[in-house]
Length: 237
Image (cartoon, rainbow, N blue to C red; front, top):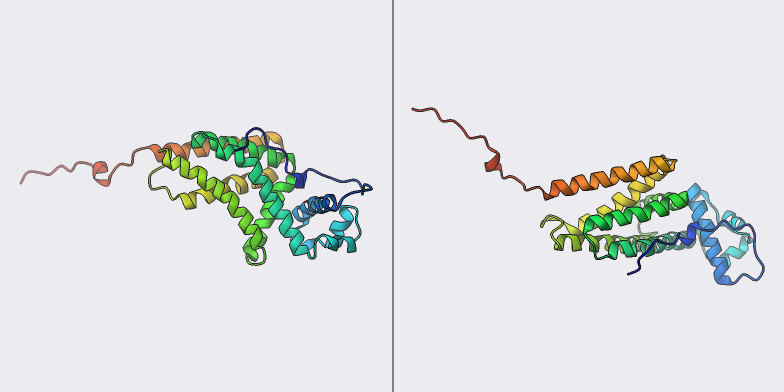
């Protein structure tokens, strides 16, 4: 597993000023995906045309079809690239041989870097979830890419359960994806609602506090119904 600070996702890293001479087909394709990420995030899938994306990355409208036959295919590659880069960024934190609490804290730190670097990633992720919910069959490759990240969270939760850090009856298959959604969707929403760094970090600390509180509650012994009953005083006959 990789360790260390994640590199910023390439889909949000570039704001290209023009079309440099001698660019390869692969470079042009990457440039299109980067421009598409920004435009889909800002305007939504249905409010952007291939011609507009082509103009944003410095190529002609017809030329974009040399790389993507349809807007659907470009959207799918853009969002799948986002998920692949998120997976790369959290691979180290989620795969670390550490207690689950430490893993969650490292994952939070990673998303602080990802989401606060550029609002595109948070907006694109939220927008893509909506499109996937509306038409799952049309965007099935996006679902597959998302499920691969869910599996990484599920594996971390499973290790925590095996180590006794979670209750024995924890539903790992449900808890893993739920943890991913709490982290990603929750922080993405706060990224957009908390414009300042100070406000966003308050949200992060609040998330940590809620996580610790939930873990502490889960670790407390559960009293049986019999043990919590008040002793009845039976009057003499």
